[in-house]
Image 1 (cartoon, rainbow, N blue to C red):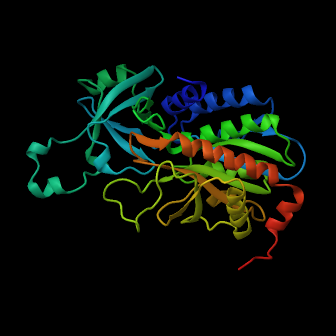
Image 2: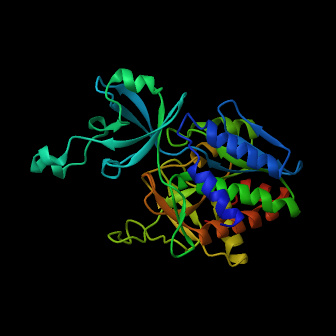
Image 3: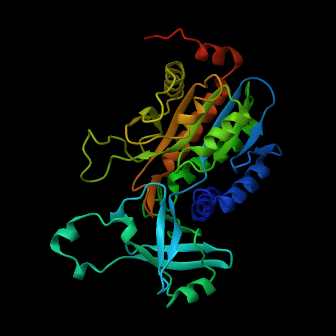
Length: 360
């Protein structure tokens, strides 16, 4: 396994539930510190590495957290009732292995529910509500579960090892949403160490994106960027049953440029600048319109007096589940595009982007 694949493996397999990002925060801090001595973090745990100390401030941030769960109750028989942290769909949860993160250590469990054999035909047709699910850690009583170290409030993460599929460009893991963005921002910071650019670049990641874009607020207020890019994943539309209307992006087709989501419409001048740069460097790209979700850019762009912001993502299959798949080509192309943008964003260009002289 090469260096970059090993980085992806460690990123995706490290736990980081919303509000409990400590492990992946430590990993990200270590990796950023290996690239640059200049790192900073806010009081919630968002973290960035800095390169350069003059010119416009450019923020490129992913988010550390992954969709997960929290223990809400331990039954008298030792089963764990759970609360979702982030958006989950009941169909993808049952019979999946999970890890309960306790102060005494990690415990393996499985998500269960009432057996389908005892459900009525009508009940089987419905998506099972999370409130009717539980985690089985093999405890026989509440007291035994507590002796293992479980307490109400403990976080729970899915289990899925990183794997390179038979097509070596296809990579399967948990938490690509959004360790894909974390990987991209680390590679961008690494590559610009040997590049000249006319600005101050902050590359890193936020916390608690999946539960309300919270770390994006604190980080952007701390950095006060002139331009901001949220690095994330988008829904791939290249699986059976997906219509052109529901999604047209495909793995391997290049990074996704966000044209609309429920939290932000990108700044037009910045959007056009990104498109022109991609074309100039012959970087393929895809467009993303996502009426049903938002990203950290939804908070970045409202910082102080307003920050021109853009979402640059990679398509991913099966996000907000225990496993997803991305293309290595899309990751590499996203890095290439972001490095090209950094090299062009000088003071004059940023001033022109911020201006209201639109081409529409």
